Length: 374
Ligand SMILES: *Cc1c(COP(=O)(O)O)cnc(C)c1O
Image 1 (cartoon, helix red, strand yellow):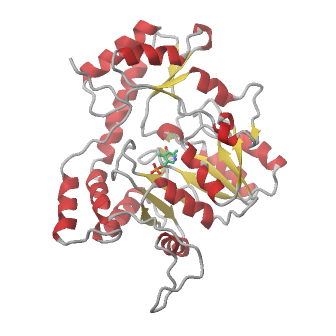
Image 2: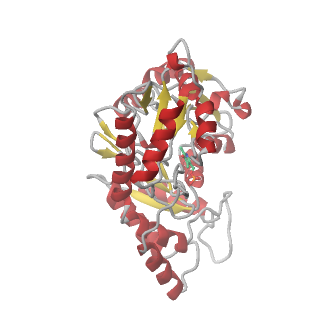
């Protein structure tokens, strides 16, 4: 019998198509339009507490990160202190601008950037102007400690909340902690526009500047007048329609993902594994459930991956740390641990099927297969 056991794929509901149809009916098939405007307003409505926020819908989370790096003023040779255990898209935009990423180790409480390692990095690189922080797998970083270090060293915080829409830390939504924050709506994320992203900021001028860059840096003139290099980074009005329909179901997706995480946690209570952790200060969105195999077991996650693959179950190792990537072999890495936390988590961790279309039968099938390995 065919099982539905994948990491994370899109889940559509129907409203998406209504917004897309409206775009067709009005012939707004363009990288601007009412769905883009409304999607920005609706996302901001979900994110905001009492602070004003501005959103800019873009073609990808990576495009939003690139504009955030530019807004932070990162120039050739500038050091940016950056999360180490994350997707390469967190880092690449720093390099697009000629910045120099320095990777920061994680802590074991949330698997995110360790504020103590960040402080150590600032002692080594006091000139660092910006910090690029990712919330891993939808679990918020320890924001009070991270923000305190950024403030102490007068550094701009760029928040990569690509995986963390719907999560919160002490009641505040991920995507609102950075001076510039970024969401992704790629197909595998908690909600999708097929591909897309959004820049979030409290500063209207920053949103306007990013809009200017994202629309080919056209100056105000009758002819095409250019005084800066621009980009074609805006989201399609068709894609934004998908996003508007998806956003109606964000909390439902978070609830279902959370139920999957809890089901694994309960089922593995007697096994020598732990789940990706979080603290009582936070509500994760449980985008991906991950397990960490206890050290004494001595089984590699690749062994488990291969056994599960035989049974048609998709798993993936934890993001390979950036300081271990050949492309960043010359970059510095700062840790306060004897053995790098990220190397340890990478050596023992595995991302599990977390797709919200899995049935209880599918989940039981995965759980049984994992139990058979351990
Ligand atoms: C998905 C992701 C991105 C990139 O977003 P795209 O929309 O795919 O460009 C960036 N950072 C992290 C941590 C991600 O998971």
